[in-house]
Amino acid sequence: MKLNNNKILITGATSGIGRALAERFCLLGNQIIAVGRNEIRLEELTRFDNRITSFKCDISSQSELNRLIAFIKKEHKDLNVLINNAGIQYDETLLDKTYSLQKIEDEISTNLTSPIKLIHSLIPVLQSNSNSAIVNVSSGLAFVPKATSAVYCGTKAAIHIFSKSLRYQLAKIKVFEIIPPLVDTEMTKGRGKGKISPQKLVDEFIKAYKNNSYEVNIHNVKLLRIIHRISPTIADKIMKGGTI
Ligand SMILES: NC(=O)c1ccc[n+]([C@@H]2O[C@H](COP(=O)([O-])OP(=O)(O)OC[C@H]3O[C@@H](n4cnc5c(N)ncnc54)[C@H](OP(=O)(O)O)[C@@H]3O)[C@@H](O)[C@H]2O)c1
Image (tube, rainbow, N blue to C red):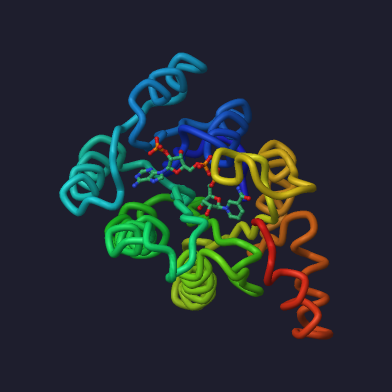
């Protein structure tokens, strides 16, 4: 894949992995459309570089998603890369009284339904441009779940299989999947050990993206998937009490 002169929409660009992707792709010479809910952080991003424009949007809301899709179709017909990075995780179990139906809906729409809707709506735009790609962010938890966050693990397993099937469907648009380990972001604040930085994740992803390596196992997810292949039981034991 070409690393410069792309127009890239990144959801969840206001923090963590999304912000690191936005900054790196911008420095590599790309136009970025940064999407998130936090207006102050979106403004900060646009001040970082004038190649970044922002669009405030809660992707879990159908009406806001419609606004974003209309904006892209009208103002950014040259969009050629879509990065579905926005995600939320509630580190709770279904037995926790605080884990509500609303939280279940928010996790499923933000992590799964809305990225699929965005892809469906923007395929015509992506298809009309060259060097086009879709990048979905899943998780090591898509392969080996932990005890808490069952719905989150389910959405990530679904986005993994969805990405694989979509790759078979699309010839012109390349479909990438970033599979992160534990990364030091707001999502994992106060929990977990041995986190990598979002910048290290981006380093590994950029190499894979350049070489058309579509399923990108980041850092120790590579080892996790080897262990899982050899002994699913051992992998399950490692991850069951995990903190990703
Ligand atoms: N950190 C890890 O260890 C880890 C591991 C595996 C996978 N991942 C995945 O990596 C992705 C990025 O996570 P992160 O660790 O960078 O977390 P983060 O720092 O909490 O960032 C999450 C981003 O998603 C955006 N977002 C959340 N809900 C949204 C909504 N309804 N509409 C629009 N934007 C929304 C947030 O922006 P606003 O607040 O501005 O809306 C924020 O920019 C997620 O898909 C996550 O599941 C992370």
